[in-house]
Length: 85
Image 1: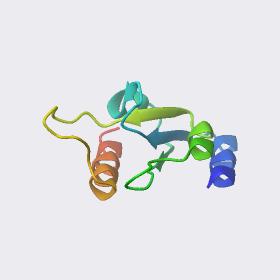
Image 2: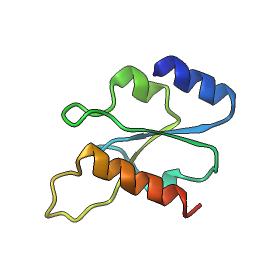
Image 3: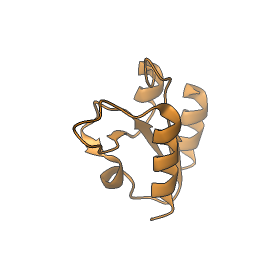
């Protein structure tokens, strides 16, 4: 995955890792139409090496009553957000 992300970077894709501890919201991070969205595993999230190959890490804003989203829901929300560019 890390090598594929490097190749996408060379092709000028904007690479976003979804992470609950990120500083940027997903909507703020999405400013290019050529995107690569990276989601991690349910328990550990995106691995460090993969995250380092991304241009930015972004979180999906959720209600404070929720602890987190499962990976399939996070991916669905992120993909929906790409349609709003």
